Image (cartoon, rainbow, N blue to C red; front, side, top):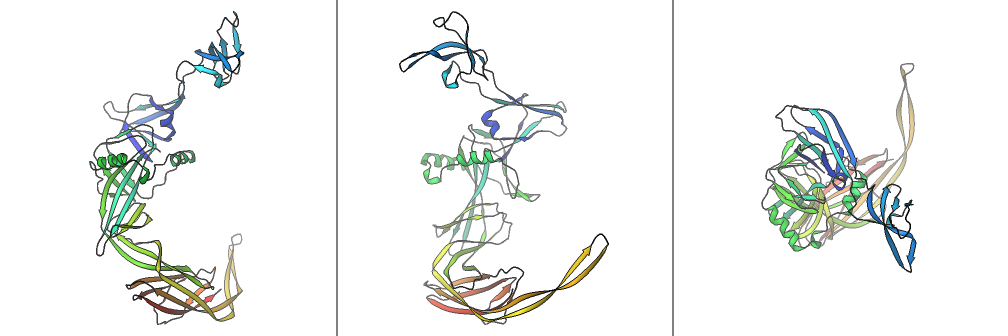
Length: 439
């Protein structure tokens, strides 16, 4: 969605039906430093066809499969009442009511609905006024490419501006805003934009892709600046976007710190778990990143894709792009003991009518279970790996306690058990820990 601001022209402002479909009418505003808007009207108009010369299929003439059309005048468009003008049928006026629309031939193009916006206002005589409104057919997203090498990483950001409208758009100056901006788009408009979504890059013609890239070289997006919780990126040079066209503009190259690691992230289960580790990354950018898709390359080879959220400078973000077939794990649990446990809970009651409270002791019958968790990790690679293990133990109203110390370095983080593991090449090891669940 885009907010369009342009100098106020001759009133009333005129919009075609197609333009109006992509305008949020409640966002239309007249802007100025000293303007006082006293009224605004929105009018829908369409030229009537009443009195138009037409041809209509004769209801009484049919020669085999051929139909005869006679002259007529459309008296009432809404009811398709027609006055027939054909002396071969009758020298008197004949009228045809409720004629089927597909039986009528028009001698001119059918008029289209237009919308008119008018203002009454008070302003300074020499003040330049602007009209502003939101358009659904202009939108932008960020696209990223993260290229990783042995010792360096490069994150390239590209602004992808899309014109879904039927007409070209000329833009004198633009601000693209990144961050969490909540604006409502009607369901009908979302469906229309989805149905007219652009084709994937590999389905576009080479000439189209080249023209977009060549045009983008003429412009750049300035460094983003924070403004009340969002970031504003300026484009000071004028540019235009043809109808149904995507415009690509380079934004910036960010310095990012990237950690590669294998990840075993699972939910607690008493049954045997066997799976592969995830190929995971942890990135820390040096500047704000607005939400957008990111293509990931290792040594210029495509290895995955992820969606980056709005990310503050120096904030960390973790993501996974798929399984690593060379790192497998197997985890099984042994129940060491299970004993009943009676827990007392003090429940407070407050009576607002009498302004006093009371308390009572409630006994809860729980079970205390002690498990030994055995984790076997195998590294089939010809190089050492760094692996992070997370076991999420989610018990409603339950308590989790990791027995410490343990020789493998497992720690408890709230209700999760975590550990960092290093394995040499072609190695397999078993790690274990005890955990107590009160549930």
